[in-house]
Length: 264
Image 1 (spheres, helix red, strand yellow):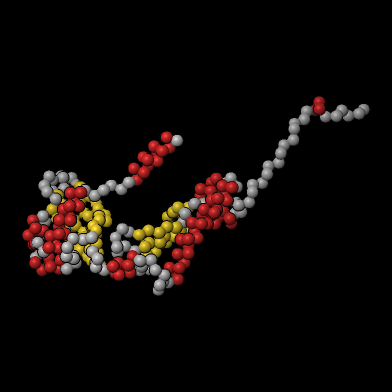
Image 2: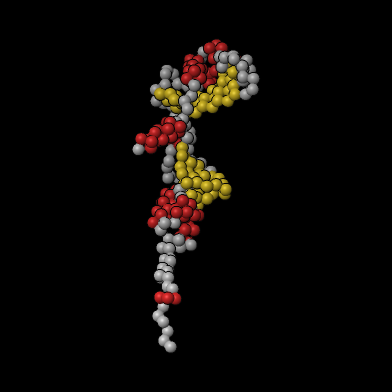
């Protein structure tokens, strides 16, 4: 039991997502505060020489229009990415979300470093939406949806149940191979629930034939994925749910000496 608990703890720790660099988070937050306060000099001081010519008062005013006065109620890191190249060059990209009562501000900051020099901002993008716009972009509503939406939604509910039920019957009939294969689906149809856009991949295998996910950002829509539970369908089509045929029992072996002697 102790070994089992140790293995579980190790697996959970291995699955934990790494955290963003606190220094890069602080630098991105400081850059946002400089834009919010209209401090062009402070923002230009931590920017690359190639970005500084673009930092005009007009550009800063446009960026400031996406922010909101005062400190946000809540800030968090949505995603981050780090890469390095030969010679010590490195890149760090971070996306933050700042929550205000009237709007949500999304900031993407690209920072670079050459060798052992300081991290400098080489790219800066901002966007903002109201709570109503965020709900419309990422909400899950049945209003105004197409027939494809309903087909995929029903499939996302039915396909996993079919896989689990088939695997249960296969285990009951001691058909272990079918039990495992019935848990997988073939192909994948991915549907953007907000826009209705879809794409299909024929060469794809998924567990339980369905899934749904949503990004961490306020603009990210729900994505529904559906696969065909072909192994489960074959299990029923080939009648593998029936009990295995019983093997004939062999009688006890007899020898010529045990057989009755013939009469003369």
